Amino acid sequence: MDRFEKQPAVYVLANRYRGKLYVGVTSALYLRVCDHKNETFDGYTKEHHIKTLVWYAHFHSMEDAINREKLLKKWRRDWKFRMIEKMNSEWIDLHDEIDANFMYEDDEQALPRPSP
Image (cartoon, rainbow, N blue to C red):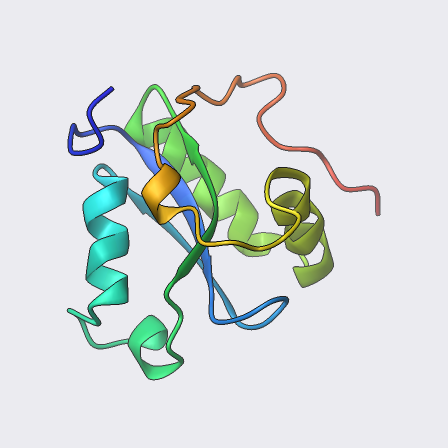
């Protein structure tokens, strides 16, 4: 898959290890993260310098991606931290690695469900 091809995705950005988080949805992940890094738009990510892509997942449809984004936005911070660290324990910037190992999120196994 070409990193510039349109593909629904949910992503999480951070300003530092276990710092401020931003959960978003897009159809062009690589380019959208470029927008955040370049502070193209005013808003929360620009105000708090949130530019590091720490987690992402691709979806078959934008509807599925939007539903997952809404779910993640309701999660507690510690649940998000566990999800991020399962994929990216060092909290490195994954921007240049987008689509290197492309996989769709499986609806059955997409995200670990945190215990209450």
